[in-house]
Length: 391
Ligand SMILES: *Cc1c(COP(=O)(O)O)cnc(C)c1O
Image 1: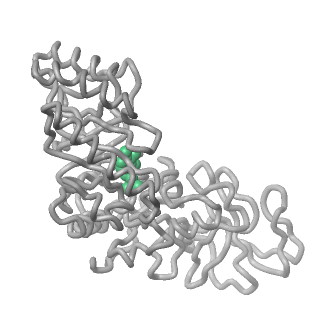
Image 2 (image 1 turned 45 degrees about the vertical axis):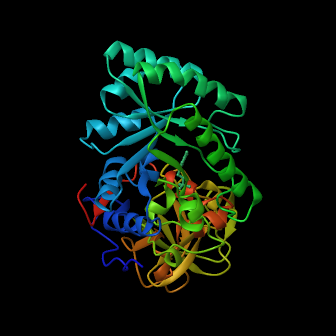
Image 3 (image 1 turned 180 degrees about the vertical axis):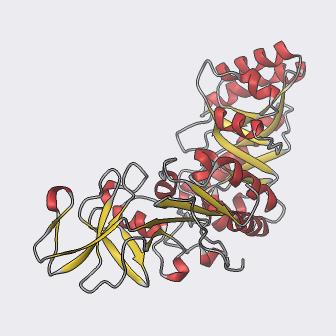
């Protein structure tokens, strides 16, 4: 188990009314915990999508401090940004379209995922032009029906690999795949995909290609399915202290803790009479004489518009719900008659479950989405304040 974090808040930049605090010690501790739960496997921390909204480079550094020996991002530009920031950890990237500059990835020591012959051809051309082998991970579609070589496509990809491996244009570092339903560990597709993965890796081996790394497990499989750990686990969400399987366990149940905290200061506090319509469309009306508080954060910052009348927040020691529509830059709270505070009071929008603060999971439940979407949507307009580590 990780120990609970002491610091949960930090001073925002001067004059800022809404901000995101990222606890880098939580990220490092979460990686330590994931490493402990996957003995014999290395940890590749997934820091795509700006570190799931937590900041690309700081999240990557914190994950490495916690023991990640690999990093991964979906997009080439994110990989190049990590290298430009001086992050030298082995790094995998997988999502691109024809025209992408594979040469830049080879120059920057970035491992490239290959799912199709056209991509292999382009990687090989870039490697030949540099006189240097490209490092690749070949991806098999074991049933997700998304990226990866499927069925006969896998056999064809292996056939295409033979000569370019022999030539030394590519070095096959890994073979990998991704689950469709890792969040339902008992689902028959999970076992089926694992079996297909083993079979696909054996087919590669029969062709004389033996990559050092086989990897399949995302956060859910890392936490619930040791049988899928292989040589390396590839968690994203859990690195940031969120549960990929909220029905099976909370972050605390898995020894993880939330790294993101979203806070704002009330911009205005005012009395209103019974029957006052609140915010666009008046979907909320004050049931009695009360005090309204204006929270200066809205859907352009990442607060879902669907959270009107349902989004949870905490003010002082009370849980409250968004009153009326979420607007582009702001929303309103019904603070109740006799509210003793005033403008400047802190509103916790996302926090840690342990203190009865609303979590990303609470927001996800309120608007019928997943916690992934809540943290990744927090926009760059909100300044990030980093605590608990080196940025
Ligand atoms: C995003 C992603 C991961 C990490 O998934 P989590 O559920 O966040 O752990 C792993 N592998 C691939 C291919 C991904 O796209």
